[in-house]
Amino acid sequence: MTCQDAQKQVSAYHDGELDPARREDLAAHLQACSACRAYLARLSLLSRLLQSGTAAEVPANLLPRVLGALAAQRRRRRIREWGIRITAAAAGLALCVGAQRLLMVRHARPDAASAEASIAVELALRELQGAVAGAGLQDRELDALARRPEVVLFEELTGRLRP
Image 1 (cartoon, rainbow, N blue to C red):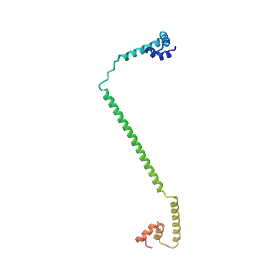
Image 2: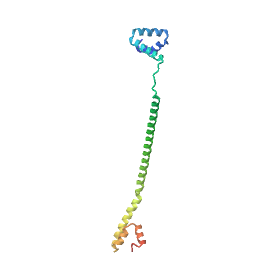
Image 3: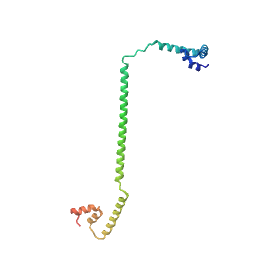
Image 4: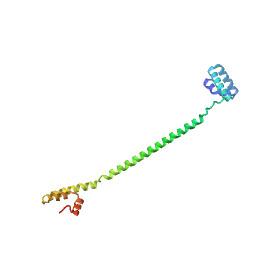
């Protein structure tokens, strides 16, 4: 029998739970092995101490200290949970604001059709300026032609531009 096998059976040996054949084998091993005898002696001492029934004295302030520690732990957990919630809400808000800004930038840009129309109007105005330059129009009238049509119309209606 090895020491490892013997130590697995020492508790049952101590409690008298082994059958006679195993009990004799373990007893023979214990006579020959001082390490296993010491293991049995420690187990016997532990058993006697547990049977003696002497309980350790509990300090009077133990319960309030334990309850206080538990309450502090719950407070820390709640603070941590709220911190996570606030961080998540801030991240969500930042994401919404960023998406809104991105959409505003995309819609603020002129699309391809309006950009082409602006270029076409610009080219038409330049051609018109060239054509009317030879017709002897005054500088003021040329300025009016170069400006946006709605501004010219407004100035004509308010009397600021005289044809």
